[in-house]
Length: 157
Image 1 (cartoon, helix red, strand yellow):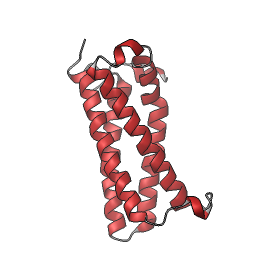
Image 2 (cartoon, helix red, strand yellow; image 1 turned 90 degrees about the horizontal axis):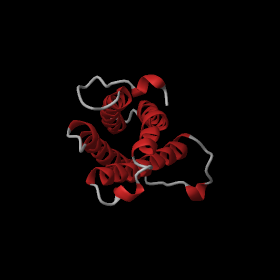
Image 3 (cartoon, rainbow, N blue to C red; image 1 turned 180 degrees about the vertical axis):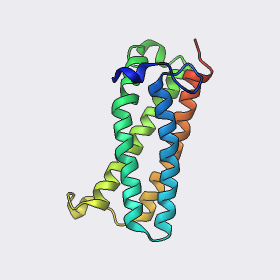
Image 4 (cartoon, one colour; image 1 turned 90 degrees about the vertical axis):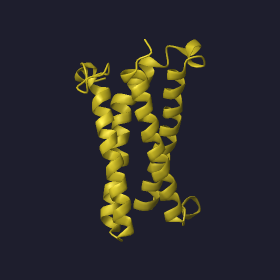
């Protein structure tokens, strides 16, 4: 983990700088995803693709730099507490939903932007899959905000 990410946060909660930065970036990415959906409706597909791909890539970076290290530090060492404490459960549910959204997003980017996958592994109903992904991403964003609040705004400690 980068040292500055563990400094005190800037949002006035118990969170670290990394957690605060991640929250702000995630909220901005949620807005960018909605803007990308508007671009698709306006048939600006190239701009839509750049917008959505950028978010999926940036999110992967945030997972690697902030979320995964935080999960390993705060959740992984507490296996006996996980099933009895709601704030651990919130983080685990968010992680499971987030992994699903990121993997689906990466799959959509690969199918939409490359010819890497053979035709039998590609989908044809673009709108359905992209709508599912946008809905899932919004759910993950809300669960991430709830997890942030559980851990840092109304701390359980």
